[in-house]
Amino acid sequence: MQPLVIELREITKRYGRLDALRNVSFSVPVRSVLTIFGPNGSGKTTLIRILATLLRPTSGMARIVGHDPVQECGDVRKQIGVVLHQSLLYETLTARENLEFYGKMFGVSDMSARIKYVLESVGLAERGDDIIRAFSRGMQQRVAIARALLHDPQVLLLDEAFSGLDANAVATLRQLLERFHQEGRAIVLTTHHYQLGLELATHAALLVNGGLRYFGEPTGVMSAIDAINHPPSQDTEP
Image (cartoon, rainbow, N blue to C red; front, side):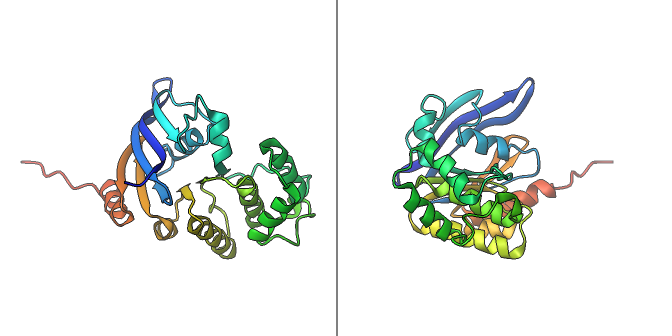
């Protein structure tokens, strides 16, 4: 049995009477890519934010690279890189200055060399001294990925990172994720791009109304999605 990089048991997140997540359980082995599908409001972003230690679950147990994201959030953050739909970069700073700021937060050693490496990895070696607000959305997402990789994490979490990108930016981001996976790391991503999400995935999940409707091989998730979108008709007797 492969070691687990993520383990969730009965994770629930409640806002008043609303369950944003309800009893979600699954495990992700090392060297895996988990793509999470689901309609808007299904709980995908809530789940990513819990994994990223940005939200506390109401109940349930989680382990990220062996650590509790509530009790050991500092240890978890050292092992994860996070890319959200919004880049959360400082627009008045250069790409390099953004990376230096976050590198200091994470205590990155040999920072100059590490920044050089991640900028080269995302194809922005020549743009490190340019102001972020002059970048396209695709380029900003590449800087956000460079930031997520800066401290050499074991797990990369992405929430709708492909949204709003043009075809070239999508292709670049896909290549980056494939390289990260080939290096033996784990990835958890949410996306509305079914084909792309399935092509990247070693595992797939489907969230609907906060509940986990499917977890398993990527080949089976589309049938689960079809069953949700086209439920069988209920014949009624005259």
